[in-house]
Image 1: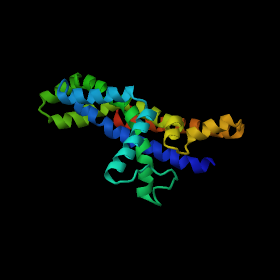
Image 2: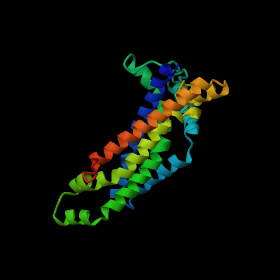
Image 3: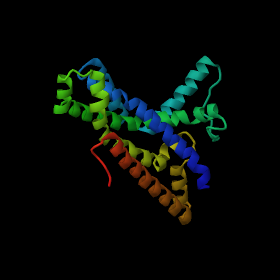
Image 4: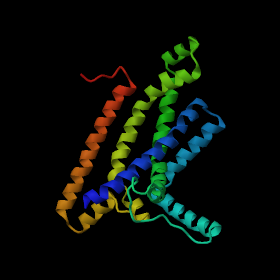
Length: 230
């Protein structure tokens, strides 16, 4: 049963993180354009993401799909509930998982967005960035090569923790979209007093946490050459 559940939960988590990274990329523009209308817009969107629960946003998305498809197509449409792998039917898979991924990714991207903005602003005030500007380097090169790589270290930590959490922490969102994920199976196994299944899911989530933290540690050395493991 776990082998049947993990692909759907993993697909939601990956797509949610893709949506989170896509939204989070706008925070660098917010830091560069500090105290402009772009900065205010990104900060407003991120604060709204912190305030809006993902399950409530999922309900709004479903209602919006029903109302808009009823109005423009004449018949209401809802995301399918029968899981099909991406390699078998990409269109069906995306139409099923993109909506919970957006609802979840928007909520967790708000934390990463604010972290990226604050750390990038801090790095842009460092002496080596000032020296690079004094040497006449292009602003784009300063941001991409010097500032952004150092600013991403705490952001990678946040994204790694949230990735591991999303594998088993989407219980309510899975209920809203009627998905069979790890979180839903976790709750059902506890309710049914299925201790073997519960222990297996705990070991699975712990293994995911360990592997994700290992990848995050490796990324530290990739982003910052001063960090080396010997």
